[in-house]
Length: 307
Length: 240
Image (tube, rainbow over all chains, first blue to last red):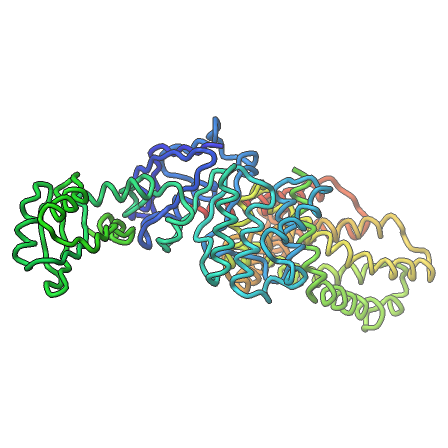
């Protein structure tokens, strides 16, 4: 089920938490929702789950924009702090959540078992939720979000509190689920977005500041190709003059002249790899290393949200 | 839908019986009502009348204090722990949540009162009990409970703090329990009539004497309806 948001606004008193946000997410897409604390991620997600009422704007779920239980049945939601009933045993809790989603009573026990297997809760299934460690609580939260097989999955920081192994497992699960569902997840962990998401939305001060795949965002913020080179076979001055004669190179910076290590920046939109190679061959220089520098997602994030 | 309401009610009933809440309520209620009905100075043997008037009188007070204790956490806790977000993002409405919680509390009272049927059986063995009046009295207790549960749920819906919810329920309840009744004595004319018709005690007392009047039914129905409606309004309003 596609989700489309049009001009969504939400104010908390005088503070504008979400400011005319519009975007669309297609079925089978995993979208990462990024932004600094207080940017409006959680507020947007709460509006998507119909927990909060927008002050303005419309949310379309497929063809419908109604606030009703039939829509909510299609949504699976893992809230930010993952609230759970601590005094309930895991299995009872999952069955309760399934029944609230209007699942057929006869299909609930089977589905609960399936979820326990999928989310790796087998060892803890008879314990009360209050006795579980944070990682297992998170799994319970995820299990309740997907138990009714929703078409839209909204996960607010799904991997907080998990150990590295669990993070990998949960990511794999999300990727698997994302093939047939519309998934929106928010996170602070940038590598996570690269690992799981097809698309990134960066939100800052209630506005969307970037929207695209990791590659697109990189291309947009990179602009200039950055290469680290190691060239030997002649004096640094000679190497410098050879490189500066290449028209696509914008800047040259020596990092370690003794070892012949330097950094070059290409002009916007240009690539210099080939010309460097040919220039070195023509001038009998030994090109030992070309290391392309990728702009890190962290840098993109900082660029867009720090101002 | 009924199934969603029942899902909430079932969960709450489970948690009453999984914790000590239900057992303590039942034991304490039977203790109080049993003591006053059978042992204390004005008990059945002294009055020498085969009826449950004493029991109904005591129950009225016991329920007045006990019901806020079971309703106080109902919605306040959901708000405090954030689980209300979990509920309201499911295929269930605020109304169904409130009704489910109401049903759970009411069934718990029903179960508690069911234990006191043994008093009824005993008294009917001792003498000629007025069956109609007794049935009517039990109905009165159930209606009264419904009213107080609704007040309790409303009190629980306006705060995150269970103690505030408890005291608030008592504060609102005490008006219906005896303040309106008391004021009615001092007043006259239509004011007295109005206050009298707002007093839950008056309505319950007439039911416990075996008089089944539609006015009483309408009163308890309106009280419950208003309480539940306000609770629903506050559950949704606090989201904004």
